[in-house]
Length: 403
Image (cartoon, rainbow, N blue to C red):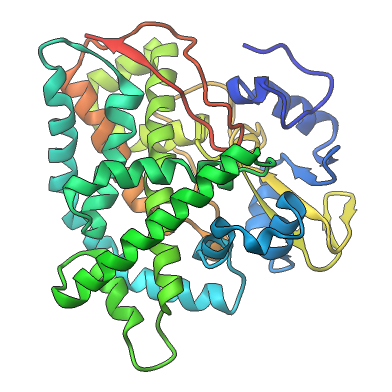
């Protein structure tokens, strides 16, 4: 564990390993904090919850990316795609696309996929039944949601791993950090290849529609009125679903397995009573969230606590800090798989509440359930595995396990 810090640096390497003491110290000392990067940082649960529902906070994606990348951001291929993704849009475009995607990404479609999700988990574990060891991240946590979102969208199985690799190259775009030239270059190359692939796949779906999410999205694009997607929005948002549909779930799976093994009493409780699994998933998402923060821009002066944030300033809501706020969750640093978690901020809130939350919870339930059933004596090579160098998109580089 990291020692309690005296200053808050959101870019410090230790923020990737154990940010929670840093959040606690800042929440106690300066809960509405003006960072050295010029951004306001919120760490209290009440403030983060209010952040998600306040219409005076908008994404203003074009301006925020120009501040991050430079005035020529419009020349970057990633920008042309990401600026059309529903999760960064403001109204009225957000409302229009959200309504369309909610109509196609339905609970019925997610629930109907359950059997296939279980089959995918088992197929990924089958090759390791003999050796009884693997890198849980590379061999299971990452390919599992990649194949699930591919199945949901109707991406041919032979293409799913390559599409997942390209989506991985877009992860740095989701951070607030500046991108090194080589990282930006990889992201641009990946987004161009993904766009080309999904344009071609859209043509296939038009010729032979299936009972999959992408076919439904293509149908919404081809409407004769103004209520549908245009072609660029279609491509941007299927890429959005692929990136969001595998990245956070992969991170959450590794973090959950690590948390349970660092808390063997909770692992034992879950093994003894599998009916705890649904509540345990929510608690694990509270205890260590794969998405640690999200940002908006104040379009009017706005007050949090005793502090007034001026219009035009950037505001970062630290989800990970809110989920460990003792005013919202008693003993927040304790993992308790029996805890009944309310007001979870992991999936956001308000109009931008995560559209894929039901799928993510189902995937995590199947992933952990499959591991508990097929690898009941799973052991970790270390309780201190390497973390990815991305403080906001939290996850493990690898997690060597045996059983």
